[in-house]
Each structure stands twice: as structure tokens, then as C-alpha cells.
Amino acid sequence: MARIVMKFGGTSVADLNRIHNVARHVKREVDAGHEVAVVVSAMSGKTNELVGWVENMPKVAGSNAPFYDAREYDAVVASGEQVTSGLLAIALQSMGINARSWQGWQLPIKTDNAHGAARILDIEGADIIRRMGEGQVAVVAGFQGLGPDNRLATLGRGGSDTSAVAIAAAVKADRCDIYTDVDGVYTTDPRIEPKARRLKKIAFEEMLEMASLGAKVLQVRSVELAMVHKVRTFVRSSFEDPDAPGMGDLLNPPGTLICDEDEIVEQEVVTGIAYAKDEAQISLRRLADRPGVSAAIFGPLAEAHINVDMIVQNISEDGSKTDMTFTVPSGDVNKALKVLSDNKEKIGYDVVQSEAGLVKVSVIGIGMRSHAGVAASAFRALADKGINIKAITTSEIKISILIDGPYAELAVRTLHSAYGLDKS
Ligand code: ASP
Ligand code: MG
Image 1 (spheres, rainbow, N blue to C red):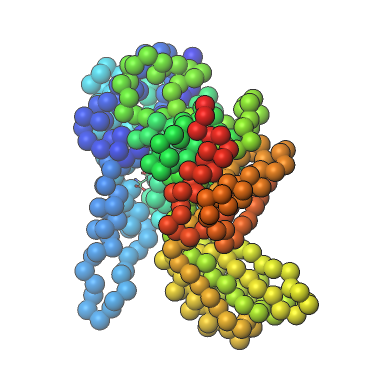
Image 2 (cartoon, rainbow, N blue to C red; image 1 turned 90 degrees about the vertical axis):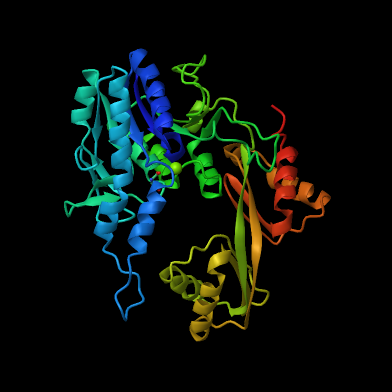
């Protein structure tokens, strides 16, 4: 017998038939004798609709700023999950399963005060642990909690993944199963490379890189939380027949296990290739090479909430002038250029150059830590295809390469095969 947290995303609960199907997945685990807590998202599209209502409230004459109180935003958008938690509890009860819904404030799931993007601080798990022991399934509304101001708070878009992992940590679950519309995490995007393979296991650190680089399977924060609390997390599909062979396998259910690297015995050097489209490059030429220059550039950009990614600074030839290149999302490039020109005096550069529509392709693998020559193979493979590299950054477990947008797919496929990822 195990204790399992099962999370179902928006597409998995998109209509009543799918909610019924989700209930069958839950029933399978209950029938096998496991203690089960379920976390649900809103029906797909619902949260967007709710956010739209808040944002499109007609404006008062004379004002053009959209007005809303973040606490009321939370009161509105948290309602999507309330609906699905109740509907799933009803579906389970109709199958003869003892189940009840829980809203974030009822456990409670305590958060901080950052309405709209709150962080979970603490979860009171004792009550549901006791009831799970008595055979009751807890159906918890994801994405929401209770702030210190005693008001509903939501966790930011995609936040029900984080709810699920946090609840799994709080109830000391053996496993957290994230059911979604894909059947696992792949070596790269299968829409670009049909030979992409589903990974059996991926380490937390690798998944963090994959998630933040565009493999949008899980909210990044949920992976961080899973890593900190060592929550073994499975990504699996809710669209498979709940009673197909192997679906209830306790140790090896179909899907991808995100786990501690110690659990991955045969670590490949490279685990996956991720990419992020719509990057823009900004270069400042002939910057003064003195203390405080980087702070003068990136401080104002951070204040303007511009997310800077790759940063490359050259060592100057004579200790007086240097060049600095960094990337931002293409959509932010004009805003960034404005910030730089507003601060031109303080920063002290000669010219600024920029280019949008670039792509960052990343090679990810924990095995890189202990292998030489991993980067060299990427550069060779890209050179053989005539792909020009604009900038390179590396970390212990990742090599990121900035290239022209039209080469994105070719680069992904080239690197995928260069590291043998298409061969199982
Ligand atoms: N329903 C929320 C959203 O769409 C939370 C979630 O689905 O994870 O962002
Ligand atoms: Mg999601």
C-alpha cells in the first residue's frame, strides 16, 4: 500500500466525460488499496475566461489603466478549481468511492501575501492524512491557498502543479503523479523531431532546465519544490485507458519519473535538447571596463521587469573598453532598448545593437559534469550543417547556443542525433 497524490490538469478535466474518466483513474488506485489525494486544475480555458472577466471590466471615464484589486482577482480566478474539485468528488461518489472536495482555505494551504503569484508557505496536512487513513479520497482544488490576510490567494498560472507537489510533500506521499495531455517528458519536442523518445527518468536538475527552456510540461516552481523535498514525480497521460495493463503499476507506471539523480543508475551524458524561440540579442559596444557597469545595465532592466537570460561579457583588450551581449524575450526588446537609452549616461557605452527572432537551443545532461568534449561535439555538428553560432553560455549541466530563428528545427534535430538520442 502506498500514499499517492494524483494531479489532473485542465485538458484532463475539460468536460464531464473527461472528469468521469479521471474518476476511473482514481478508482483504480483506490481499488488497489492506496491512500489517495487528488489535485485538480480548472477545466481548460476556464482560467483564461475568468482572468478576461477581471481584466475587461469597463473602465471609469477618464482613466485608462485597467483597475483591479489583486485580492478580488484571486477571488474570481480561484473559482475554476473550486468547480472541478466538487465535480470530481461527485463523480467519485457516484462510483461508490468515499470522497470529498477541499478548497485551499479549508486545509488550509497557507501562502504569502503576493496575490496572483503567491507562494505556498505551509500546508496543514494532518486532517487529510487522517481521513485518507480512513479510506476517504481528498479532492483538493489546485492553484489556490489562503493568505496571511485571511483572503484567497492564487499561485500564478500553471500553479496547480505546484499545489500537487506541495501537498505530496506535506502528506509524505510516496509518489506525485502529474496527469496531463502528454505521456511523459521527451528527449526533445516530438513535433520537431519525430524520433524523440520518452524518457523513463530525468533528474530534478535536468527537468528544471527542460521546463524553463520551453518544454512546458510542468510549472517550473513545482519542479523546484519537488527537488527541495525530493518528491518523486511522474508525468503521465490521463488519456490512456485507466484500466489498460500496467497503468496501476506501483513502481513503473507508464510515463517519466522526475527524481533524484542518485536514482538514475545509467546516466546518459546528454538527456535532452530544449529550445526557446523568440529570443532577442542586445549588444552594448565599447562599454567602459570598470566596476559598476554591469550593475548599471542590469539593475534598471530588472526594475523594468525584463527577464535577462544569456549574458556574455568579453575581457577587454586593453582594460579600458569591453562589449556586453545579453538576451531578452523578443517581446521585451523595445522596452529594454528604451531602458538602456534612458540610462546611457550612467552606463557609458558607445552604441547598442539588437536583433530579435533568435532561438536558444540547449543541450542538457547531468552526465556532462564528468565528461569532456560534450560541447565540442555540439559545435562540430552545427558547423557541419552550416549553422552559425551567435553566442554560447554553459553551466555544469547545460550548453546553450544562440542561433538565427530559421535554423531552430534543424539545430534541434542535428543535436538530437549528434548525441545519439534518437537511438534507444
Ligand atoms: N487553472 C490555472 C491556470 O490555468 C492553474 C493550473 O491549471 O495549473 O493557470
Ligand atoms: Mg499545467
